[in-house]
Length: 88
Image (cartoon, rainbow, N blue to C red; front, top):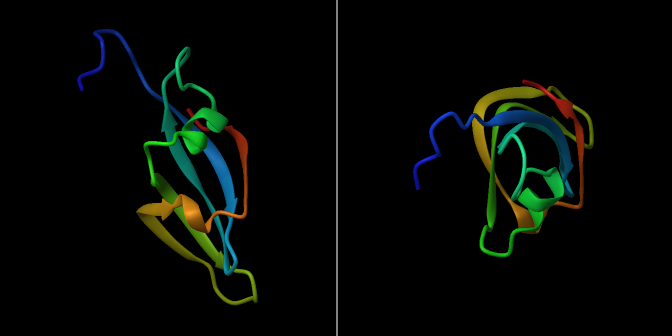
């Protein structure tokens, strides 16, 4: 589905925790209106995975972090999630 002319997306920095990892990265959201909140994005029933860009993955048990340009995170693995702030 194409975006309306003049519409721009915004990026929000977010924190996710799974059983094994902490994942910090950016998700893309509409600038306002329908599904523009972080909670809307992660609570959508028709979406099983969340695309995340500019990602840092850190093991909960310690160890080196790794960076990825892009991942998709299965919602079923998320134990804790919250927005850190708007990136752009």
